[in-house]
Image (cartoon, rainbow, N blue to C red; front, top):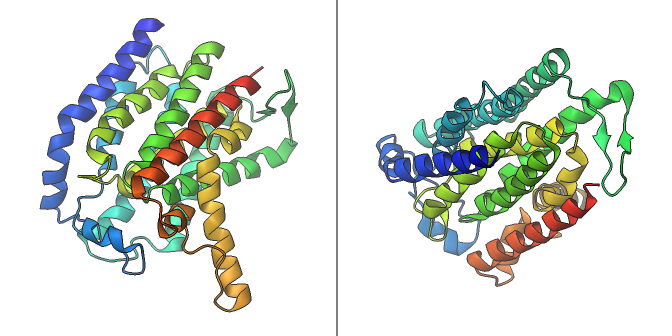
Length: 319
């Protein structure tokens, strides 16, 4: 067990670090530079041209490492599928935006349809080829699970797609999504080991891949993960949670994801209802704090600290 954990983290980290220097030149050859919105924080305009689609690095590291253990740990298959599936959706969106220079990328309905398709295959695999129950463990209540019967499947779609898009919104500052998610992945690793769930090789692989990616993604970032990385990470978080019957825990350890997506929903809804008024200076909420005078690194640090503390709270709730 200990060797599996160590090997998974170190192999994934090594792949990420070794391939990292080659990602930026590769993306530049594709002319895949970031384009910042002019209505965003002024400090972000200098990021124009920074290579995006760096999530490829995360996906390669996680996939290669996971394949080394898939025979002995078949439980990682659905987690790997959802991670890779959403990563490919994100890659297609990134490719259209930054390489083909179509600013909107995939149309909203196209992206949503692909997300529904990937999630549908995931739930089909869980129901047909695993004994994983869709019942949800209630935090701080030993042995108590919520079972909504046939509603478990619609709820799964809502949680998976909500988590994926929340993670996507979190990817807006150098190192933010990476820093938050490496803590969430560490939480799931600890639980996976403690419950002997059999998915620890991939949770460890994500930890290693993100630690390596952060070497290139911390402020000032030399590469961004793009939708390729953020959608993949959202898929990983949702899949890992469901494999351990812990989707409710996403609201705790993934509070930042929830805050980010809710800030967008509230901002847009309030803007439309009031004819142009805003709740936040800018959404997602990390930009609101920037416009309040926080530095980019301070926002990342605070959001990471909040996530670390909530992961500890969630661990106390695993009874």
